[in-house]
Length: 409
Ligand SMILES: [Zn+2]
Image (cartoon, rainbow, N blue to C red; front, side, top):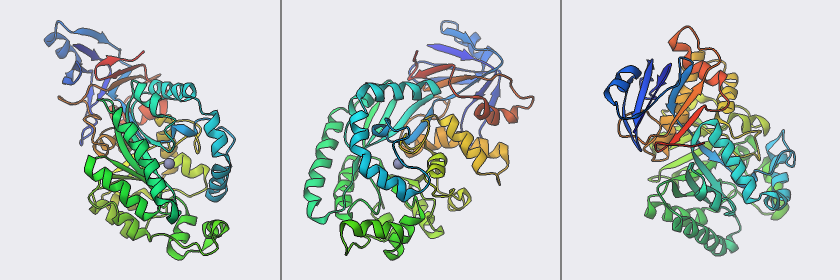
């Protein structure tokens, strides 16, 4: 049993309580939070650690959307426009796969841990990331991806999906959970999607799907036209959209789903996402690099869609660090009051993400997993209400990381 105490404790509950001179007592689970000195006096036999007045103690961050298999990319892929990027992914993915070794993925996971992220949602297209995700101390929700649009190949595509899913399911343990990903409405045949979603329902697995990332996708699904249409017609001159946006969203009714991007979703689509009790992952830096525009967060929040924050992969980002992502979000959404936006972002990366991924994490409350991080601020602000903002502005790596009560060095 340990007690760590410090300057400020962010509970990350609904009210976003901040306890000055706070502390937390934990073993594998959180036992109690409150005033640091009182906890030290109460739990005399615990290992005691006082981190000082510049420290912030909070739940470990949760990054629900990464693509580890594209971690070899730095400048291989083309940025600036979604279609340019997509074409470069299709022509260079094999080269990127070949360069993506297990040790490269392990190094990326170590960096994620150092930043203070303790859980990830990893979308896996090929299974290259399976071993590193099982081995890492990070908690991983592992989204096995179903992708492919050729109706003649659906059986083969589903067989390949199933074999990757079964391999992941066989590796299941308390910190590795198999899950299902449906790549997108333009790339996954609805019949293949239905087969994969049946498995998700039967196994009570969480689902991830890209949706309305670019205007090209919007135009293609709505009218079968535009740059995505021209691109599809290179493969098949009679190509038509396989589904409407509405039909695609409806596939996920009754399945706990995290939709990623939705930059070009309409109000009524956010309402469907909310009604189906699904969530939305916002990736502002990926959206900026692929020229897709910025998400209108108010549309999503007005529809009561739970909002999470993800980095996407190194295929469309410069780091998988959620502090970098939160800073980018602060600078993107300038119409928000700054301190409320900081609180919203910290909630997105902790308790909202935990709820969406079915994890007993993301809060410093009795009974939750003791996934805890401590940050060291260079200079704490005068007002306690400015702590969330300064945690975001001043942090790149965590000073301490605990997962299920165990310190990760
Ligand atoms: Zn993605």
